[in-house]
Length: 394
Image 1 (spheres, rainbow, N blue to C red):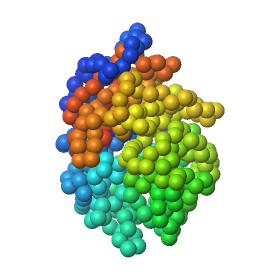
Image 2: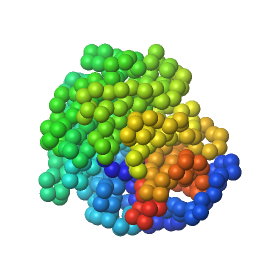
Image 3: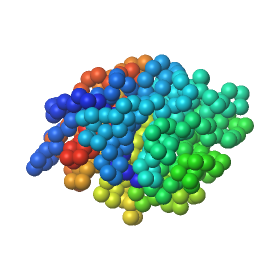
C-alpha cells in the first residue's frame, strides 16, 4: 500500500558521485536527481524499509551472529538523517538468521501505520515446527506502538522453509505472510509451492495457510521471494520456480480478491540446475507497481499498471555482467525510477552497490553510480526522501 523497497539508513549520508557502471550513452535529464548514499545504523545488515503515506521511513535490520541473531526496528521522520531508538523485533533472542542473504526478516506497514515483520526462524527460534522444522515467525507493533508483540509461528502444516518468505499488508487490515515449502509429506523442489496465511484483523489472528497457485511450477528452495500489497488492495507475489529442477523461471502471482485466488504469469525464463539464491522486490508510485528480479546474473525491473494489470517488458540494468544480484526498485512523484543492485556478492562474501535512475519512459538517465562496502550476508535498498530524491541504502 506504500511506496516501498528493501532498505535501511544511518545518521551519516553522503551525496553520491555519478560514477559510470559500464553503461552505454544515456539520455540526460533537465535536472538530474542527486542520489544520497546512506549506511545501515549501528553497522547492521540486511536493511528493509517502507516509507508510509505520511513520509515516515520505517526500517528493520539484522545484528549479531549470522546464524542466530536479532532484528531491530527504527523510524525516521526526516528522510533518514536521524532515527528513533532501536527496538528489538524478535521476542526470543537469537531467533533470526542472516546466512545466505535471503533468509532474513521482511517488513510491511499496514492499517493506521502498524508495522508487521515476518522472518524464517533460526535454529534457536521458538516455537518450532514438527521434528524441529524451521518456523515462519511473525510479529507486529502493539496497539500503542511502543513494543513488538511476542513472536508467533504461523505455519500450521506446510513446513519445509529453506529460503523464501515475505509479508505484505494493506490499509484495510489484511496481512499476508507468505513462504514456499513442499506440500505436506512431499519432498523436492518440484513439489514446493507458495503458501499464504492471511489475517483479516490486522495481524491479530491468522487463518490456516493455503496454496496460492495450482500450477505445478515448483519453487527454488534457497531462493528468496517477495510479497506486496498495493494501495488498491491487490496482492502480488514474485518467486523463482523449479519445475523439473531446471526451469528456474520467475513467476508473478497476482490476486485482486484479497488473496483468495491468484493469476500466475511467467515473467522470465532461466534454465539452470543450480539454485542462484536470488531475491526479488516491489515498489509503487504514480499508478504503477514495480517488480525487480535477477536472471543469469543480470537484474531487471518491470512496471505493472494498477488499472489494467498490464506488465511492461523487462528493463535491464545497463551494461553487460554476470555478477549482479539482489535488486530493489523505487519510484518518485516525477515518474523517475531507481534500480539498485549488488555486484560481486557471493557465499560469505561482501561486494558493492550500484544504481541507475530511469526517466518516466523507462530510459536510463545520466544519474548512475557505484560504491564499495556492502557487508557479508547483507542486502541493499532504496527509498524516496521527502524532497523527492532517491536514497541508496547499504
